[in-house]
Structure formats: structure tokens, C-alpha cells
Image 1 (spheres, helix red, strand yellow):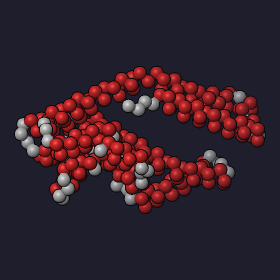
Image 2 (tube, helix red, strand yellow; image 1 turned 120 degrees about the horizontal axis):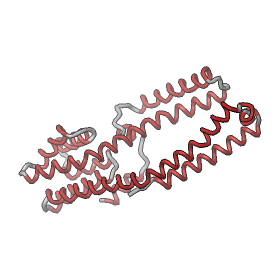
Image 3 (cartoon, helix red, strand yellow; image 1 turned 180 degrees about the vertical axis):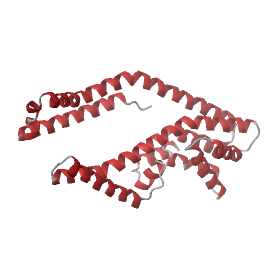
Image 4 (tube, one colour; image 1 turned 90 degrees about the vertical axis):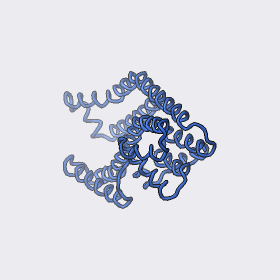
Length: 259
């Protein structure tokens, strides 16, 4: 089951799936229309406000149209996954308490679909709708990691599927799962605290050249204007930007931990 979920995770996500995981109601057509509108707006700002050349403004327009909507969708998607991870242990605890009290699993899921916080509420509502349409519970739960590709959703799907096929105490299994999820949350907070100094240092190092260049521009504009008015200056800026980008990516890779 874990191998199947890994194969699904490694397969390339479609645009529709990314928009769905971000919690947006856009269609691919709407996304492309937004890309075109953002590109035109970026071109207009570059050409009219900043007075850049036509070809430079076209380049900024194409880049803005391709990148800004993509960054927005990715940001919404990451934020939705974060909110799901924070709320999901509480939903598992509701199931544990309900099963111990004698409620069927479906009734516990219905309580979560009515009382939990988003996006857990919406995901469990979809799970219930699949089960109502006749999809077996283990298959309906297996769709949850496809919509929310997080380890927490995978753990939950595996526990429910194993309990459905082999039996056993669902309350005990989910109680153990809840402990695991909360321990993972604590570990994530510890990693964030330990790496906060490195992240601050990386932010300072990455922003320092831009801040220094801006201060020099205001204090000695003739001194730094050679970078913008000569071909050698353009090449220097391009090379510096390339190396700074590589340095930022390396620092980002060093301070991001996957567990």
C-alpha cells in the first residue's frame, strides 16, 4: 500500500490536481485567463511605470504571467496542507472517542464533516459522499492521500484499510496513530526552532547585496551606474545574479528538513 501511494506521489501532478489541492474552484481555462491577465498587467507596469524597453517589458510580462499565478497556487496549496496537518490529529481523536463510545465509524466521520475546521471538514465530506455512493470504506479512504498527499493522510488510509481487511481494535489503532501524528508535529516544531537561526542568517546573507547596492545607488549614483549603462556592467550583474541565485538555492536546501 505504501509503494502504491509512493508511485502516485512521484507521478507528475496535473494542473487540475494542483488547483484542487489548493482548494480553489478554478478550471484550467480560468487559470490560463488569469495568467494572460497577469502577464498583460506586468507588461503594462514595466513599460509605462518603470519605463523599460519594449522587449524587456515583454520578457517581464511573459515571466509574470507564467510565474505569479503558479506561485499563488503553490502558496495556497502549501497553506492548505499546513492547516490540514494542524487539524487532522483532532479529527482522529474524535474518531477514537466516538468508536470507544460505541458509534459506528461512518457516524464519527459525519461528525467530523460537520464540526471540524477546514480543510479537514471538506475532505471528510468528500469521503462520506464516496462511501454513500457505494464505494467501500477502504477504497474511499485510499482516495484521501490522492487529494491530500501528506504522510498523515497516508497513515490514516493505511490504518483504516488494514482494520477493514483484518479486523482488530480500530480505537486502539487510531489512538496510536494520533500519538504518532502529535509526536511528528512536536518534531516539526523542534526542527523549526533549531533551524530558525540558520534561516535568519540565510535571509540576511541573501538580502545584503541588494541592500548595499540600493544604499550605494542613493549615496553615489555615478559610481554604481556603470553596472546599468555598460555591457561589462550588464555581464557583471547577470553573473552576480546567477551566483546569488545558486547560493540562495543551496542555503534553502541546507535549512529545509524532510522527515
